[in-house]
Image (cartoon, rainbow, N blue to C red):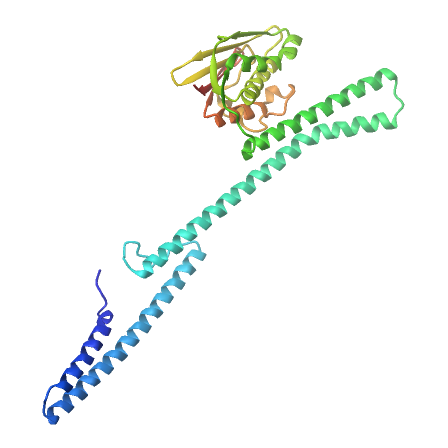
Length: 336
């Protein structure tokens, strides 16, 4: 890099002072010594004033450049005088300011995204809670204000209890979703029996399957073990099984198969249900998603969302294959 000549001023001044001393030590005639000393002193004085003015100008330019940089950053544009490849104090300070600005902007973007997520979540929760709460209020008012036959009263109480159960199920699902999204639930990974985990998941949907006369088949070696969290994995598989039973017609079948691979263990849950159109493969894993064809079925649209989140937290993944009118296969891949 080119050096400013004024940076050498202090050296010239010191050299001139030394020369004056040397002239004084020399036995020169006064007629020669005095003009030389005066001329040299004048030169040193001028150089000193020139150096001082140059320094003041450099400091002013530096301050102006910093102000221009700050003005540019505050207006969300890159400074025009920024030279990132120049080895100077100004470039170093500008670089640090740009780094700080980038981090601040990234923080603002993240804060905005978090705010948007919270707004969407509040909107979703409000929408989901509104219907059961309105039903509970309506049936409560009817039971309190009207004289009803005992049979009708029992019917309303049964419906009211169902709405309370639905609301409780929604609250429990929301709590699980909150723990999943905030990362506050802890995984307890262990080399446990996968057969026992699947049995726990199947136990949660047997009653619903029996009511619809749906057969549950399990193809899993009882000796099969896997490094996983039994509780949360059973929760994920239970959600997939609940979804399969819910959308499989009476007399259908749900088949569970386990296949060890080299790096993963594959768990397939196949049903003979209504199927899912290919354009909705990604949608079914979204929070609160409910297809129009499944509007009559019970649920809040969180089961598949939670299942994939739990599997992902264990460094696994899920896939879906489906054919409308034939059935669907959800595949869970967990690291061995």
